[in-house]
Image 1: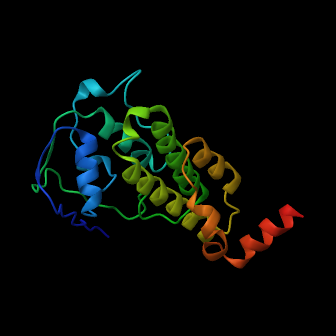
Image 2: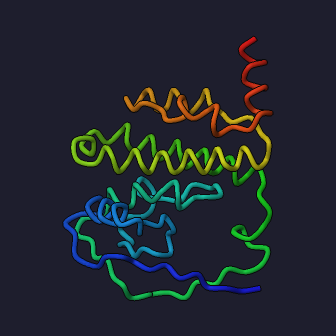
Length: 189
């Protein structure tokens, strides 16, 4: 079956940077990480520049870099594409460990941008933290659905290196199902 989802932008306008547009879209709950929703200059892509990692959720992993690399940015209400999602595509296929691992790698890639780009910290800490939390939630949701123990101990150090308080510390008992909590307690001895 085919369908074409409707992605409606709540804002339109010109922004001095991709991060400014990212922030405005995030504030309006209109930010979508899907690569097909953005047009960027070819010169920004290639060896030593932007590239998609070979994972599922590759657009989630690269979108913050796209926003950082963009200078003057325009947000349009016009649809420049017609998206169709096919049956048996990655989007409609059953959840698997590749999707779960891709979500984790997207979180780590986004955390790495934040760690390496100190110039973003004074202006966009709340926005990037929100993005990191969204990716972490996506990853944990996939872990729960697959009944796989999350790489909690890999995520927490990533937050610590970023000097952000990991939301997972407060949320572990309420988010994880009982099987995961029992597993954590068993690991702790």
